[in-house]
Image (cartoon, rainbow, N blue to C red; front, side):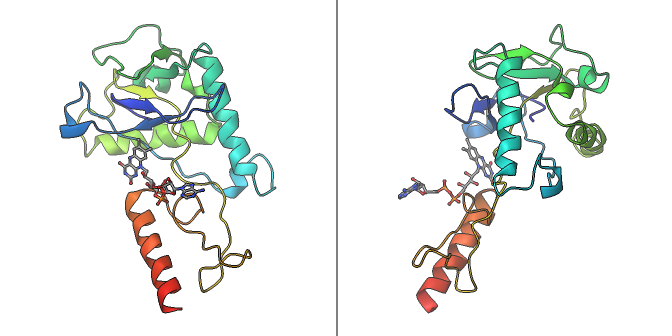
Length: 196
Ligand SMILES: Cc1cc2nc3c(=O)[nH]c(=O)nc-3n(C[C@H](O)[C@H](O)[C@H](O)COP(=O)(O)OP(=O)(O)OC[C@H]3O[C@@H](n4cnc5c(N)ncnc54)[C@H](O)[C@@H]3O)c2cc1C
């Protein structure tokens, strides 16, 4: 979810749209851009099997594909329209920069209600520290569903999984989310393997 500008496609999966809020080199993009993360707990998953979190991701990503007109456009909405639960019909002073395209939409129907409610509660708080963050014309582009793995490959105190010699670490194994925590987990895992 990106109130601002530059987001990129983050998956090549068919019939799914996933974005990644990122800053361009030297932060010279047309708009300021940032991802807004909402906590999703296992009890929010649509089931209790081990891959239920992935099912939720896929449900949102496929819905985004549909809402974007099945052309890999990302659904997007003005912040004011999101607050008022109405689809955007015209951009304001902030123009989306997402490629291949941003499709005017109502993101309230894309997310589970608790996600929309969290965003509506959280973004105004961010705006108290970051001027303009909750401007009515700020653009939300969605979804960024791959910020961390919704499962964990279990490892023992030596960092080894139930498959001997396999040491799950980092984001894809479910022990980190982002650059710093992935790097720290990788270092910790390597130390355990080296020291024993
Ligand atoms: C566009 C983009 C922007 C991002 N921006 C940010 C940001 O601003 N801040 C932030 O904190 N995080 C950001 N992230 C997330 C961050 O990049 C990841 O959280 C982090 O890189 C995960 O580290 P990792 O070591 O767990 O996995 P990776 O960095 O994905 O490393 C996994 C490695 O395993 C290799 N590999 C995969 N399969 C095999 C195999 N079978 N055999 C051998 N090697 C294999 C891969 O080639 C890769 O080198 C961004 C991600 C993207 C895509």
